[in-house]
Image: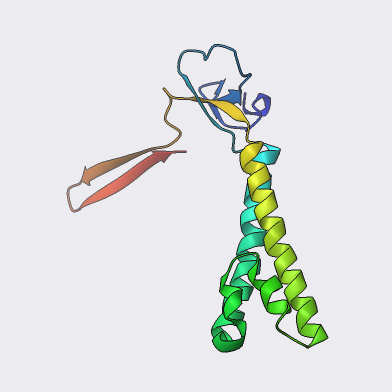
Length: 149
């Protein structure tokens, strides 16, 4: 049943994915893949969002004043380099926050990559199917779609 599966993905009464214990034999019909439902996957996702948000802000700032903020194009180190070139305290605080957010994103992402677990995923059962069904009637013709997800 779906509630018995860690992921909730169930097909024909069987879990589509299961936890994998390293060193054990892979059962027939399963493949070993990187887990997308563990803490490491959450860390990778959070890392991408933190780094992306921080770097997007730095990139926009560098576009606005490229002669003064050109170092902001450099990921993670750019805010710290630029902070040494400015005199304003408020701007330095914003740069420190931006550099910290980018750095945190990189640390989370790398931790998620290093700590990534493995899971068994069914290889003999498609997760989604889509069929195109032509229909012809007395006064009409058309195409219909049937799918299972």
